[in-house]
Length: 244
Image (cartoon, rainbow, N blue to C red; front, side, top):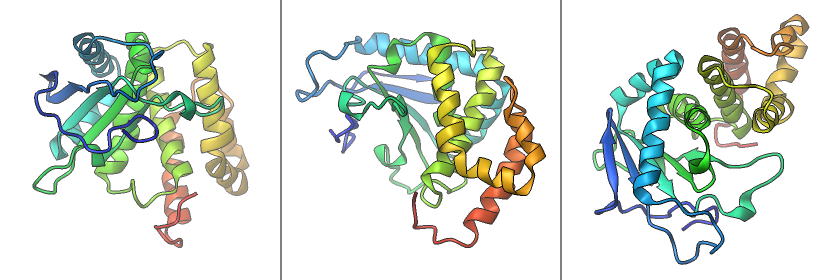
């Protein structure tokens, strides 16, 4: 296992799995190094919860359904449950890792794309709609970036900002309650951390556009249009190997 609880080398072997609507859901085994006090979820129960979350996402978010259909046409989607992910010491008050899309987890022999999402003990306890919401961040936000070959060429802040914008659109389509503690924290992270460079760009180039942020239900298609201009301008003159 890596320091965050993610598997370094993934051998699916005969692990519990289910093929469902064109994706493969796999339950990875616990590691002897996992903390003993982590909550445990049975493998088959975890798979069932993930399938329900995925189905809920497709049924209630047209944006997610359309984007995921494009992704599946490019490569297989895997959703992997790891009972030791993430490690408790990787949690921070302002940035908790609930899930991650990591193409290196499942590598195709033909060199084509794969879209593996890893989630763990924390997220598997969430209600179906909220689990779907996080899958939207990974599959719609980061999945689209991987589809467009931008994961390794983009600054971390911009990767996360764009993914959070897509996740916000998913949350609107899912009709999630915006006043919950997690929702408020995520909105604050998006505005005050991950999208801060993008917001600075908007202030510098069109202060009036900042009104798009000052509403409960942001106009995400319009914000993404502006983000695309910002992304092009901020990345065309920089070394793609740089990260922030």
